[in-house]
Amino acid sequence: MSATFSIAFDSPVIGTAQAWARVPEEPSPAERDALMARCAQLLRTQDAVLVAHYYTHPDLQDLAHATGGLVADSLEMARFGARHPASTLVVAGVRFMGETAKMLSMDKRVLMPDLDANCSLDLGCPARQFSAFCDAHPDRTVVVYANTSAAVKARADWVVTSSCALDIVAHLHARGEKILWAPDRHLGGYIEQQTGADMLLWQGSCIVHDEFKALELELLKAEHPKARVLVHPESPAAVVALADVVGSTAQILKAARELDAPEFIVATDAGLFHALEQQNPGKTFIAAPTAGNAATCKSCAHCPWMAMNSLAGLARVLETGANAIELDAALAARARVPVQRMLDFTAAQKTAAMAGSLVPGTGAA
Ligand code: SF4
Image 1 (cartoon, protein in one colour):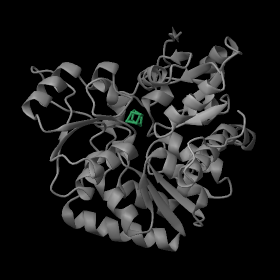
Image 2 (cartoon, helix red, strand yellow; image 1 turned 90 degrees about the vertical axis):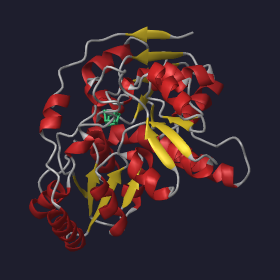
Image 3 (cartoon, helix red, strand yellow; image 1 turned 120 degrees about the vertical axis):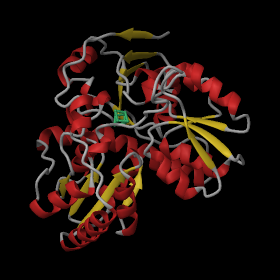
Image 4 (cartoon, protein in one colour; image 1 turned 30 degrees about the vertical axis):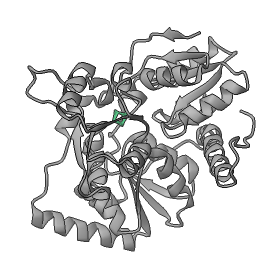
């Protein structure tokens, strides 16, 4: 049985309008080349590695690839940053990714091109209200999405990303645990429906994925009958219901590589199209609609906070040391526990899969 809990969101520090106003101008081709060379040199001289999310600007993704860094989803970003020997991690993404990198590597310097790059899920789940929500339901295992502040993670039993959320909740459900889930209501609802777990859902949403429209997607599918539909589970249930594959960014990339189809309609942030097109020459990727027939923009699926990351910002923080993530040591130690639990679970799952076992061995929550 499911239930919901509604709460008014705190005002964002940097809302979407302010974020769009802060998106840096596109450099000219010559400026871009100069910035790429300067950033590559700075990464070398500062003993730094660039870890970029799939939703960031293609320039940052290309630079990460060219300099031995990583372009990935938030789960792999966390894993890579903790293991890499560089003394400085530069995280191109949003605030919670920088915080997670820092809590897993307290001895390293973690810089971000713009510290105000945030996430509507994080902003919509303030720690004080979330803690009261948890206090009101002490019988439930607290599972939070990675898109939350360190303070919210510190209140959780488990942290999950969209790559592993389904498996972890299925595992907890099999142990008879009832779940308190935050913050994305669409992802929570999808997992509840897939696993049959008893989940109490916080009512947050991603401002990008929440905008995909089912009716327009059906019309687009009719125009492209050979296309397969790939949907991120932060999208509304009616959009997810039209998908051939539902999954995280990494799982969408895998499906695009493996499915034998000439065209794909993709419901996730437009930033992922860079990797989709790089990895699949000859296949066509079409953005899922975010608006109806009357709108001027048919798909505006791009995160304004991700767009605040730029080559110029990266060069600036490497030159000045500005925008370092600072975390209280006690808070980081508490928040690290559910993050590490997720990393251990996924590592055990990988080992079990390689050994041909279906049941990953994990510690208790
Ligand atoms: S795309 Fe959505 S979930 Fe991802 S950082 Fe932006 S607001 Fe958050």
